[in-house]
Amino acid sequence: MKRTALLLALFLAACGGSGSGIDPNLLAAAQCTGIGLENLDAIFSEVTGLLEAIGGTLPPNVTYAAPDYTITTSFGTIAGSVTSTDDISDGIDAGEAASASWNLAPLAGGVLAGNGTFNLSRLTDALFTVTGDGSVVDGTCVFNATNVDLDVDLATALGPVGSFDFNGVTPNGPITGTMTFDGSAAAAVEALFLGLTTTFTIDLDTFLPDF
Image 1: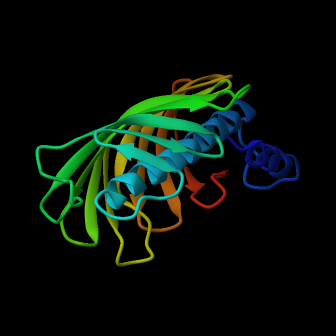
Image 2 (image 1 turned 60 degrees about the vertical axis):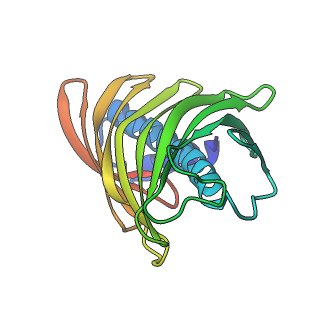
């Protein structure tokens, strides 16, 4: 979705930044992972935003006629359906839950695509849990998130807390691991790449890896 992040990371590596001294194959795989996380984060925000808005004022880029919806974004069109065992016609209240399947169709000529399901359980007015999975393809970078288990508290400025497993395909080989979120502006990554265990973080503002 954004090539500037990858170009900036390559520039930093060349200038002795966060990638200095790192195997260039590993650095490229970590950059691919950051791109995948950025893409999934954008979709996550759009889909959970829709679920939060059901029963109220929908965002202007959303078309929702229960159970089907479409979300128009700058990187493609997200479409899917919402299901729930609760009556969510008036919104997802505390103690209620809903699931949204999603499929991302890229813009004309675009390379970004993906699909998955996010399940939102609202625990209180401000606190909810999101589970599910998602897969995104961005050119030669493939990113699959599984066993998503994140808590989001709207009453704070903190980011999500929790973790998910991931596996990815990069130009230099597959990468698998776990991402952990603690509410800060960085995700901690423990991964296996080309038979070697590695750890790094991904900045949740720039989505660049740091070793």
